[in-house]
Amino acid sequence: MRTPVVAGNWKMNTTLAEASALARAIAAGVSGVNGVTTIVCPPAVSLLPVSMALNESSVFIGAQDLSAHPRGAHTGELSADMLAGLCTYVIVGHSERRSMYGEDDATTAAKAGAALAAGLRPIVCVGESLGVRDSGEAESFVASQVKGSLAEMPDLSGVLIAYEPVWAIGTGRAASPEIAQEMASAIRNALASLYSSDTADAVPILYGGSVNVDNAASYAASPDVDGALVGGASLDGHAFSHIVEAFAASG
Ligand code: 13P
Figure (cartoon, protein in one colour):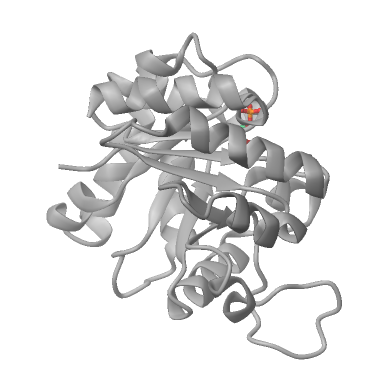
């Protein structure tokens, strides 16, 4: 039985003060909601104040990215060991990292490996563009991203996967629950053939892309969709808490 997971990716939003206030609003909104793992991923500079704001709460913290390198001359980067004291999860291979910062499956795999080695749980993002979907190749494209982004990682315990179709991110054009289910199932099949069906059954697979209060329950009802990675709607404490509740009710 996989526990539902709802993660908020705040992206490059919130000042220090706003991040603390949002974290407090979410902690209040989800207190008493059981049977779901709630994660917030603030900007790196807000990890510490957010962890203080969430001190008494069951909400977990994630980073939005990390360096694949352990230390040294990498100006502006943050290592897994630095983040390990501040959070539990870290997003890797987000489509914005892939499209704007030239990250590919190999980079994503290196980052996921660095995260695991430091005891962080990577949320590995995959998802096809509209062009790939229109060509009918979405399943094989995403299966290949999964393979490349895990790059023969010996053990997937601790790993989460987020299916985030590029065309659904920040567009208001969410994938239908049928597409989300179909793709989550295709990802699970890919994991079963790369690893084992036990491993495939254990890995949480989240859907991300224009998830909101109105559509959350339809994803929560999909058997292979174990949660959501939420962008825009995670910046509203009320909305995000309702999305968490929708998945808690499905668990
Ligand atoms: P939106 O929910 O704003 O579409 O963003 C999704 C996303 O990229 C989460 O990582």
